[in-house]
Amino acid sequence: PGSTGWEIRPDVYSYNIVISAWGNCGYANKAVALLDRMTALTNEGKANLRPDATTYNTVLHAWSQSSDRNAPVKALGLLEIILRLHEGGDRSANPDVQSFSTVINAFSKSKFPRKARQTRDLLRRMKQLYENGQERMRPNVYVYAAVLNACAYTFGRSEEREEALKIGIETYEELQSSSEIETNHVAYGSFFRVCRRLMDDDYRRDDLISSAFRQCCSDGQLGEYVLRQLRAVPELYVSLLQAYIIDGEVLYQDLPSSWKCNVKDRKRRKGEAQFGRRKNIRS
Image 1 (spheres, helix red, strand yellow):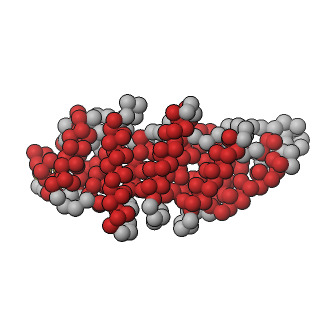
Image 2 (cartoon, helix red, strand yellow; image 1 turned 60 degrees about the vertical axis):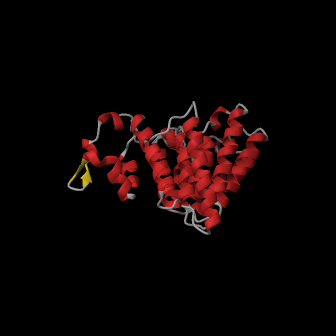
Image 3 (cartoon, helix red, strand yellow; image 1 turned 90 degrees about the vertical axis):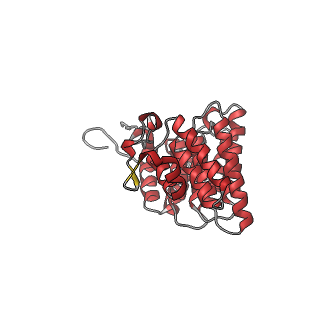
């Protein structure tokens, strides 16, 4: 203790900040080492250092940022540990939609084989937990968009790409039929990406994109991300936006406001929302 009577000691908030810093720099193993240290200190009786939901989600995020080729599997392994801890009565290990979506994103960014199937299975698992009463597991539109991206960036043999296309279309249709989740510009853009990357240049692809484009405009979700995906299919781009093309280009601000009135950018949470609440310890 100093002359002011305050004692400065690291707490969960402090650890969460440092874990996040390591993760953002690509050092997931160092983030895991801090998590292991917190767990060990907790087992030694320092309950104030027990990892919380933010701690676990921050380590999962570190894996999603890692260049380690096995990062998705390691993130999934940690998620399984968190779920077991929660089922065993550890209320601090409280997995939520962010936990699952982070692991889905880790697979989506990777070159992991059959990642479309893996992300689809994680989405199904989330839905099952939500339907069983775990409100924190309620899937959101960004989870669906991440699954669509995993499909769009599937490589490998034709069978794997065909499976990814099937999963992508099923995921989009499931999202469209949901009474709880509204399809936004990110999901529409991701679905366009699935179609243009995995389908042949034929009428079936054009019909799917055209139909989705009309629904997107009707929903007021025509964001610039959607336009970028559409621009990658030049003939369709011209066909759907011919009335608004000037000198070979479409200016976003010239499109009908009703087509884009509901576009909202996702904002990153900062401060307390990211790391938890700071606790001062007075001696």
